[in-house]
Amino acid sequence: MKVNTIYLDNSATTKPYKEVMQTFMAVNEQYYANPASIHAMGVESNELLMRAREQVADILKTEAKNVLFTSGGTESNNTAIIGLARGNTHKGKHILTTEIEHPSVLESVKQLEKEGFEIEYLRVNAQGVISLDELKAKIRKDTILVSMMHVNNEMGAIQPIFEAATIVHAESRAAFHVDAVQSFGKLPLTFKGEEGPDCITISGHKIHGFKGSGVLAFRKKMQWQPYALGGGQEFGLRSGTVAVPHAVALSKAARIAVETMNERAEKFRKWQQEIRAELEQFGDIVHILSTPESAAHILSFSVRDLKGEVLINALQKYGVIVSTSSACSSKQTKTSHVVEALNIDEHFKKGVIRVSFGAHVTSEDIAQFILAIKKVLMELKGELLL
Image (cartoon, rainbow, N blue to C red):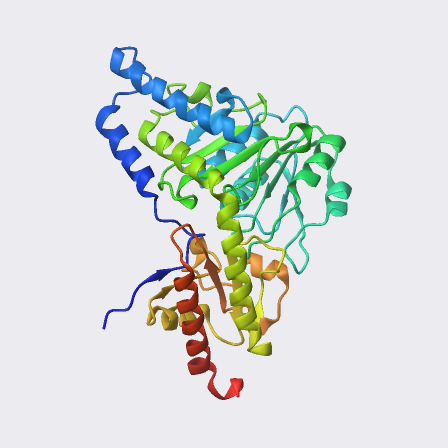
């Protein structure tokens, strides 16, 4: 008998909305000309591109000229961090980030460290959240960049980015970059004057758009050294022929995500609480990393002395698809840097599983998942659960 597949790995990637796929195909069919060309077809493509840019700018409360389309979250993070750092060396070379950032941020600052920049890392507590006092203590007059993710991709911790922005702007001339790949469309996020971030990263495939699409947006014009050189597209900040279908599809996905955000958040929180309640029945056999205050769409937990891969394979037999704590590093055998930063018990470090919800998940899926995880835990842990 075929088992219905329940996809609960939406923090890794999402299934595109049908409306987004239809838009993507229509633009590919009708507006395939290069938007940089001066002929009539190029002008039409460029007009469509500008409308997409304006839609994203309107959502984020900035100007269209401050929205760049990229190939995704990794490129946006690389471009923001390296571009802003290299473009502001006249102010200093000190950079702050956190110890639980995405590899696209951590590897970027490591590269800058090789170039002579000074990198400092903010620690997190057991809930995965930074200390604003530590931020205030470590920020300096020569700090030129602070980069911080809004929602952690592995366990859903929410950073106090608006409070952090206030400190950054009051204590330094640094640019404040926020990796919003896991938060955009799930939590309210716009440029809120001096209270908000200066730069935001978004990924299309995390909001039921397409892989290969992303946004790097700014609150205002900033000093910058282009990371990609060439024909001067995207206001000279990101050269290369712009993928108009991807940009238009992303703008549509972004609009749907924001319009349906509250409705989805309510469902996600309810599901998260239901799963948490079931897992808590297993006592000290299960350790839940995600706190009740974490983002509603992510729930990470670990089973004592059990490798995550074993649990993933066992759940898959019941048609349930989940992942280890991060899809970007799920094929690696070493413990995640996020798990290490949380300082959890050694017995739970190797078995972290992430369950993540998306727009296509149903209440019936969650009910089936709960049945499956209870069966699997009983099968795998046996006598320990008696």
